[in-house]
Length: 376
Image (spheres, rainbow, N blue to C red):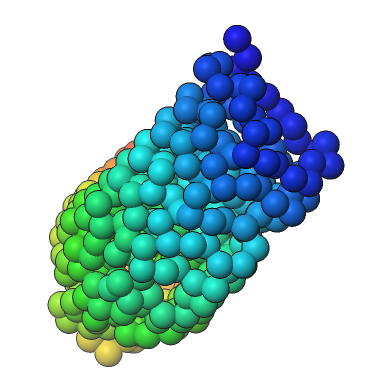
């Protein structure tokens, strides 16, 4: 029996209630209707396709009514990229009790309503990337219709978010990956924005307008393993205790491109699982100068498992001899595009695992024989 039917790009403009009736009782699992200007799909048109698992409606220009998807009780994957016009009626998806992947990128609809996602109890992946949906402020009710779902991945990149309210994701207790990158978020993170994300592993906040951190910013997400804060304007990280103190499980931290000039030596204390640290394109030069009031700030002192460290483009013209002390696992070190002209003789004495060292675009003209001895 037929299992896979593609009607992509066939100038299909109308689907009636009886269009697919002849497929009733077949084992159709994949239906591709993409790239058609569908001016109308009648309610209950898919009721005959109870075995369907994959439905592609990409680039179809459809109106999502409350009975559009009725009967699709086995559907696992729904592609609605660039397809939705106008309001999505409440409870439209509640027929899709087995749905795991809902991809809604590049759409324009008035907003997320109270019962938009109600009934999607098996949903694992939801993407709303590049949607124009009046999402400037996410509140604790925005995603409440997903409270009974088992959502693990939520992609909200390029959705023009400017504020995250307190408890904004509190109904998503199973969420593992939250992507808020490439938005316009401008606020101080109090910590309450992420309250309730008890299983979160990755948070992407890169490329936002202005995020200021305080000690409590990540207090409710100790399970976090990956935190991306590239180019978010968090130039002041000199807070005590450190905003990263609660993140004992963190393995990847990106705070690059933030013009950070002032940090304390305990900024990364306790991050014993940290594997990758990206500090490129900041302004850390003063911290490593001998003439710095109080002496050089040794902010890398408590990272025993760090393997990859990027310090590119920081204006560094001095490196204290103790800078990399304790980094026994370091395999890849990037010091490129700085102003270094001198490397202290015992600088790399503890880097016995080093595989790659980048020193390009510096001012080094000669190096003492002993410098690279231990590392190489």
